[in-house]
Length: 97
Image 1 (cartoon, one colour):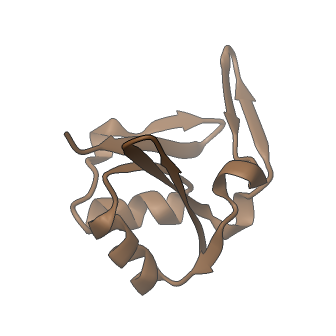
Image 2 (tube, one colour):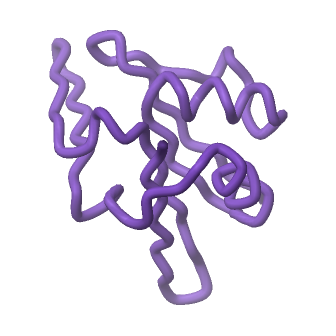
């Protein structure tokens, strides 16, 4: 399962998604910090099929976690060469312009 949360702003939106098992954790490596905060990422708990639909309708997406990232790559939402790793946890941002 995955957490997905939509953030709406002035003429913009961002969808935050992460693997269920890493919510609330903080990873540090040298000068990088990956904070998978509940405030930003913990929205609805969704299935793989629901997350596929969310990916297709989102314009800007923050994706954290091995399962989320692998799904995004399989679905053609993201490129594996764009993944950043912090303490072995994959992270990426996808923007459609």
